[in-house]
Length: 78
Image (cartoon, rainbow, N blue to C red):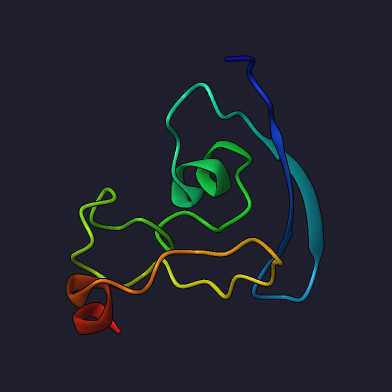
């Protein structure tokens, strides 16, 4: 299977759009992509280190790609 990077447009909290490339071969989640590009001020995203315990990582996904249904733990966080 060949590696395909994913192109993502991220609109930050100030309304600035960033076009980034997310590798698919590094098992990074969206929080890690945002942190690797330093798109969020320090301490405003991933405060819990990606353990889904602080709700500092919130996003809206606008895509034609079908996503799985929200899991119970995700809904509880919101």
